Image: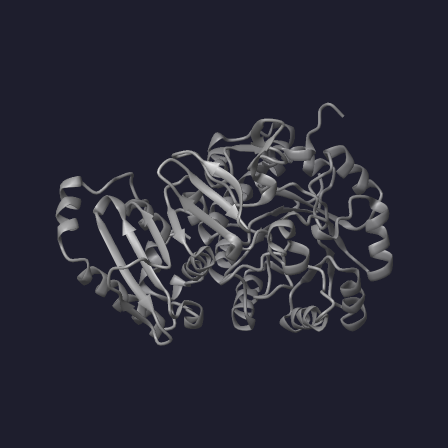
Length: 335
Length: 143
């Protein structure tokens, strides 16, 4: 059996980064405090000083640090994205996670020794696209969008020498990664352009006697009954009236959780497993990292004898968005 | 340390509701200012200045109001706040000690956030970014 995949965990703040490292992440990823990354939320992310502290903390403990610059450079000021790449090189991160082709070109010309990862936002779902990114820009790893079955992931891995990273846990959305503009429909801003889906300044929670209303850009997107679990206020997870029935029209609030198929993921040679959630707190990062570390180590030891511990699923379902967890596109028995 | 399931006894809450809320709010404000001065709370006051906040500890019958200006925090009188957090004491403690993630508490409807959503995110992310490892409180923290 090959080496265990790297466990790649999110950090929206210095304490979250430390929580990831302390609980067994091999690698942490972070972004700067601006629209050059897809979690551009008020008060989140790193400045130069906290980035330096975080990188030192991880490197001293033998872990790697990746910087996400995974939005698309906007025409009005491309230099901001280029500066983010320069800053990553200067900070000494182990790799940058990029989506924009122009930015990849800039990075590989200006900083030839900077390792490049192709972001999930780059939306490359086949080996031809990934190999092209390798040939053009020297991309060393690609993060696959959450739309492929496990067999399809294997097919990609079998036809490329680029490392393949897959998502292992976290909130799911409608998963048109790198191409979704739903948020722009309601707010004028979306992940690829502004680094944020459903920006908080457009969100309004209205507490009524009976219901909690969620409004995005003034549009009523969901109405929760008393004590009914709530979710992130995104259009894709809203409930709408379609043909006289009010229900989830696009996607239900749910979280991806691949623990039960870890032996299969190991067997096909996945290089890294990623955890979603830079917007979440250090408590989430600690709990999810600790659980996946244990599960991944167990899968590596036990191979086919691997069995899922109820405590792992319990810990993960507590922090999951929505009341359900899913294998997502990885498992499509009908295919 | 793990916070057990508990709610503040209603008799205690009944008494607390009748006491003036200013002294506890004053203590909170002093504490916040102290944390800012020592550089523990990395607050960008420009994001908070001019806003009023309300923290309601539901089961304890305690409502704390305070405001922020460019220099720090002050107590605030009654009137509607720009941002309001409401939860039971045990859940506030779990959140502060990083046993629970605020998003989890929000999804489960244990934490109520009302008012300016973006300001709420600023405050949440500010609390998350405090590096308690440099303070004596570090040994109480779960993460």
